[in-house]
Image (tube, rainbow, N blue to C red; front, side):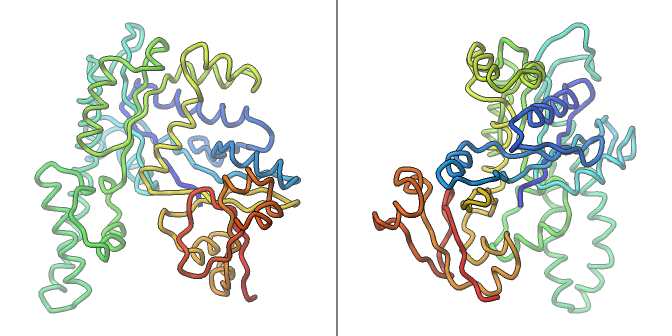
Length: 365
């Protein structure tokens, strides 16, 4: 599993430019990191991870297979989208399918590019998008809750539980707060997520700045950063124009170009890392002569669950996980060296997978 990230924003904030630049950057990477277009507005890209190449070199792997992220360039939003204005219905349908939302906010001034509301105010732009999503969520819940309430009053246990969850969300939304602020027990999280609410999804704010502000941001992005911190949301500063230039460069030139601008890596890397943090995702690896491969699991996943990401049969017939920490695998030059140094471990069903683990699963067919 990777994750699907929806890119949203008002018109003329650089949303589609950023989407195109990110996916072109991925396409321009080494052949081991392929890019493919699923639909005109969907880009499936490899997750950059330098650890994978190191593992492949040690294991002498014939192929490198990274884990993946899907970016969805969702139709531009306008005020009134929750009522069907512009491409409102299409926008809302697409956003329900993603795991996380990246709000692209205009944090640059350019007299040649008009703003839909004739002002540069990224915090207000974010509030406009959030308001439309909240209104759409509230409308959806208020229509769906009527039959659920009738069943709940009749004493049906499942309906009573669902009604209580829906009321938690409705109360928040009527207060002008997104559904992700709900106070939930661990048992409520899965059924709450199944309500399909857009404002329940994790959010990252992506500040599209001018080229000169790409390394450290500017006054506009500082306001967004303060807002993101207050909301415990993700925050990334990026320049779509720089990403466009990076996409046109050969890999050997890319690092030097970014360094000249005070940047250590492309914006794609920072967005992916922020998305992983938002969703609580980690990466583990499998490595051998045939291939070195990255796999994504939720933080806290136990070994059988991690095995199930490869194949459901691995989880059903799980016996044990042969485990080497990434640093040990690299430092000791592979599995043989890790065995000799006592760093090769056999872990059972209760083992919680750590980020970077190199695993080999034993299972009953």
